[in-house]
Length: 578
Image (cartoon, rainbow, N blue to C red; front, top):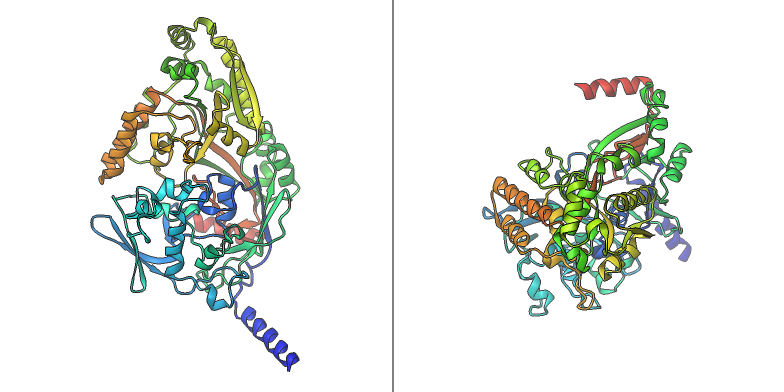
């Protein structure tokens, strides 16, 4: 009898697996890419680093998703939605065919079926104080002043979030004020949906989601692997199940030269930013690889929504003086840095503000007004401001400790900055490299004078960059308050302008308010903008349907591996040109 039972179980599993309709020419294989740092946080609603977001967004999903080709919002867990005329009430229809990844907490496959209860439990998780009494990243940055009743729930004044309710077979979310970016925020890794059972059993770091890939449980120190989710619900236009790939591997390597070597040896399938010293050899020296039919390599140059900058420690009395911060900005020759250090591998130099000057994405934003108060190299003005602040030729200023994340470019830029500030202002800048996690910890604690940082947008709106400098975003370790305003910058006029922009419903007027806020930020700067990314990205041509984009988002569920034939590539080229 036991043998018969075992046979039936195996038969049922075989039938279930065979019922999955795999694409005959796309299914299978592994894609491999490098990351400069390993994931930092396994609690998705606490993620604040790019590396964790890239890896775990393949595992977890939100109500919506961002199309990596168009950067438009797509349905995901929610199949569709309606928005009330005043923009305050969102009503979502939830798919009924989504299963969470297998886990020991589930007694059967039916236990894994996603329901509205799981979504409500997830939002209650985000709005619950952590064990240390802190605000979660998801709550503090996206939900606190957004969803009706979220703050009352966080403060334990209510048992439920009044603005999140089930109405029949639909989910209703009511906002406090209109938010044009709300659907984008629902697509972020921090607001991805968890199983209620996983939440109750406190198994959140096991990362049980609904995404196209699952944890493979074969993780290594310098490698993170994901395996195909064979229960994934989405199909392609031909009716074949997604994802196509069997697995995704992330290789942890912070050295750009080592990344390039892995790429050239086909140990990784793409390189996201060429080492500056190798650009000429890779681009000009291998033209035949790009121009053959079919090509062996495909080159893409992409303006990214990413800003690199140094933050002032505003708790340092020296940098409390606006003239000192302006002097440091004027004293740095970004043209020289771009030419000699970056080897022109950027989209724009940091002569604007925190928001990357990409007008086709930020329509209606007045970048000329921002640039007017930006900082181009002006040594005479820098020396004059420093003298007015009481430090002629840098005398009496003391040394400055610049903290940065170790890496080829970061180290070279820090060294160039240190040399220029000494030559131009007579101030010694000591450079101190560490890993990303330590840098952020020290920035919050104020252990340093200048801190390297970069911000990759979560969604395409200036708000995502500017909000990092709100007074309400200042972290406070003693009160366990989270925040991304590591400089501890506080400017009432700037705060008010962003508040007005958030309440403004007209897009044109909203952009004007964002522009005014950024002008105020740069007149009284807590940062030194360095450059805006515009990387050369190269991928082996056998990787298909991979889209590079301004948000540096990756979604591998429709990526597949298939070498081109000359005839097929010619047909595809004609199709694209038409």
